[in-house]
Image 1 (tube, rainbow, N blue to C red):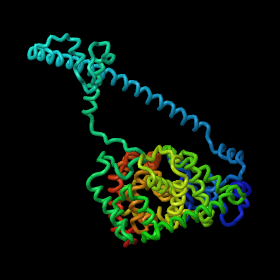
Image 2: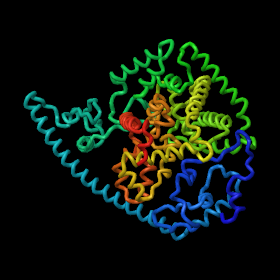
Image 3: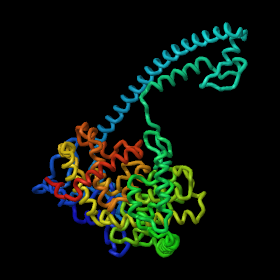
Image 4: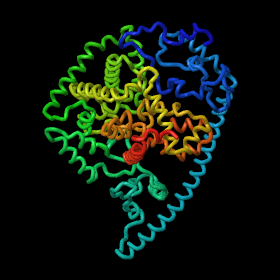
Length: 551
């Protein structure tokens, strides 16, 4: 973009400033540039800094930042022109060299894998032969003892076939023709494999992505312990009263909410439902009717000129929401999400729709689906629910998401100033609690905005499994200003949690790959509880003394 004309074409041209019109969409991949927070990026003069291998090129002016940024709302620009501009920045030699390195590394890994597999196979055959020989000797000895003690005259074939084994069918077989094919050697091989498996270090069971999110953790404990049953009784007693004590409910909920009472607890903690039990049903009916009144009034305008860009961006983002969970790939679920996000966007023109808000619907939706089902939700077919239940889930998810966003809306207004402030506060906080980590990232020129922007924009939903997010939100809703204030300390504790892995990385690329792909897939309630405890400790130390952030 060398000319002013090109720059005008790059940004949205002649965008009508009307309520509900599309606003600039800042996604997690394109954080906004703020000179006040990045003074070190502004150099004297207009000369660009020399390129250093392995380090990203920093923008020295807003125009240069603008020229290298591609945003989701540029739907009116000429696609061919943008592609041509992008192609100019590509160096064919570098591309080919990188591609060749990738292919070479992949070939080496494949060769190493084949060698490892061959070695393992040889070892496995040797172990199997040894185990089979040992088993045969033991069986011969046992048969001989049985003959001596009982005077058994049964033939060796029948004796062998009648031996019961936990690895074979328990029924009695009379001859080799009825026995499983290859019984002696296969059974011995299975025993050998089981023996080796038992000798390995204990590995925790893999937790389903969504199922039993609050009831299972990585240690594989039972679904309902005595302590958990006692906590569930306390919740039920508290919620059964005519007026729920919200302060007591927050204290109980801080350590996690049982799945059976989570829907009603979230509605109370978010302020969607009143504490008075008699008024709840009437409030629910009124709010649900109000939401579907918005649908009738506004949803047909999604293809109007002023709203079509907003709806188009929502329509693009919905399939990307939790793509590995089949529940969210159902057409009816995606239509629900589209309605929720579109209605929220046009009712909040100060921010409009921003990429990342789509993720914030999913925890509410899953929790309120649990209100109507008992089985696992990961593969649940929502079309089996009654239409009224689906409508209730949709309306309740909309209002609770709206309550959440009311407290953090400055995260999504133009230039996202709320996120800018929180990322800066995170940097100052980490510099105080773990100077080694802070200096290590400074040494390799890792900016906090490059990884923590997504942590703030998506409330860590892209870094944690959905079951962990729901457990995290139990505490967020119980904590005063949980989403807007306590989340900062959770992010600080989360970063320092990976201290060892961070300090082991010795270049910019390695650090960024680690920070954007942290290994939390097998996390459960235990890990989240430890994270929250550390975050509370940091809050207790720093929240009432903000000057301690700075040196």
